[in-house]
Image (tube, rainbow, N blue to C red):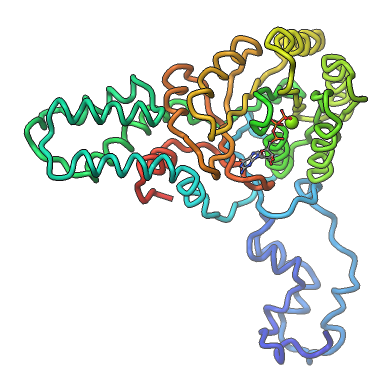
Length: 408
Ligand SMILES: Nc1nc2c(ncn2[C@@H]2O[C@H](COP(=O)(O)OP(=O)(O)OP(=O)(O)O)[C@@H](O)[C@H]2O)c(=O)[nH]1
Ligand SMILES: [Mg+2]
């Protein structure tokens, strides 16, 4: 470490300590000018002195205090307002930073490849060297319905195809473009950011869904996003049925530096939610996220438990839970439509997250769900990692379903 900086192939004026080099590069949302005002930098950038051991004095210097937004030791990206969530009123202390691009579209495309390859192959088979007629259109409509897009959207697509084109040839690419357009139109109204109104604190998010659809994982990823945005989050381990479920949430709590309120296995979930609300108020959290069990004996029991959670929360805050988020597993297909129906009635779902779009997803069902339920889709899950939650973008999704190159 004591060799001169220039012998290591590094220009003396770029020999900033790693942390400050990162700040100059824009990470952490602090601009270069601010960093260069620091005395340690002035010494390093003047280029006058012979490089000697003092050059590395910064190694022993105390670290600068961490900005508020850095209180969570989360690796990787920095979330921003607008990355799928936003505050109803801007907050000065939500320190936000630019986010490096990840090959998200690629993962989405790969995840949807099974659906899109099948669709694309059928489009080629149907439309190559064939004049457009009623029979072809009918066959295409069936193909779209099989891809879970729903009758309504399927008919809109075939209507648009037929528009003045009967008796003429149409290329597969032109069909794919129309498909992407119509899917985007269906999804655009539901592609909405999660809005947090912090005039009432904490904003309560109840997360519901069938077991294994990704509730706990989504909570972890969402917490990371919010914490990076400068918000304080408390988590409630409302899945009191399984020890593993509580442990899983605690791990996310540790990763995101967030308080987890948990009780013994078998404890009353509503009681836990009540305590967690009080804890979130006490510790001045901006957001309280409540995990729930997906594994209950029957619908009546599930209904009772969720209704009870809502009831006790409303003793403290009449509008809680402000957001009821349902996770949907993108590999399930048609069944997801029924799941939304049930949880909407049982728990008043007002937002969706589609998970596992990186697997062998059948994303078409989201189009049918959008047409039927018109619930906002805040995020999509594209992996099990902390960064694998992306804001839902109608255009990307539509391009991926239609097997087109995409805009991202
Ligand atoms: N590939 C992939 N896996 C995911 C994604 N989201 C969740 N998973 C995985 O799916 C499995 C189930 O996720 P959980 O978060 O435990 O689901 P849950 O809804 O909490 O399940 P229960 O607690 O049993 O009701 C875990 O192995 C997760 O790592 C995703 O977006 N992509
Ligand atoms: Mg869980």
